[in-house]
Amino acid sequence: MAKQVFFSFHYDDVKTFRANVVRNHGFTKANGQEAGFFDASIWEDAKRYGADSVKRLINSNLDDTTVTCVLIGTNTWNRRWVRYEILKSYDRGNTLFGVHINSVPDKNRQTFFQGQNPFDFLGFVTSEDGRRITYYEHDGTDWKIYQDLPSKTASFDRQYWGKGFKLSSWVQCYDWISGNGYNNFATWLENAK
Image 1 (cartoon, helix red, strand yellow):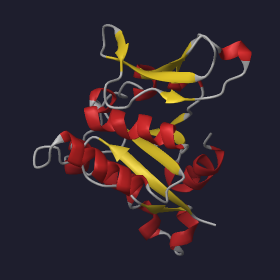
Image 2: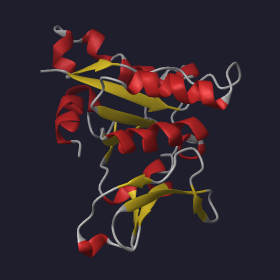
Image 3: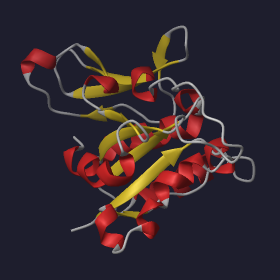
Image 4: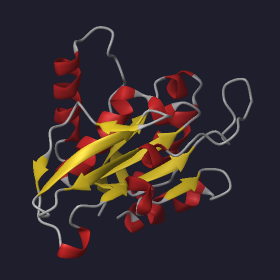
């Protein structure tokens, strides 16, 4: 059965068409179900709305999704709302995976070097008793407490108490071109953890 997928991406990657290559690849298959997903994403539009409105919009679009796919371009790693979409997805229990799209030719037929993995810049720390997690983000220089989501109650095995974890420790990333995403996206979706 096809999964409901939330796509997270930097808006500039839509303007150059690279994000849409992945998001719309199911339309070119004989049976749309072959893609393995239904798209539930929104476009970033923080200029017209305040932060609370953007969060509500993201949260409502995450409803009924089980997987979040992050489309990774050059600057995706440091976009505020992409970071929120990733951590909110983790917070609500969506499985996550990333797809590098800089190898996809843009509207000018250009490709770019692979962007940094946004999961390397997001993580959490468990409390000393394993009952709370606090989200963190790396700004390119230092780790700081993530301000857009509060800490939350959790239950971790003793071996994880008082430790910090990057999301990249278990979130798998692929490259759309070298990984043959057109044919393998459904498999990546199934393997998401």
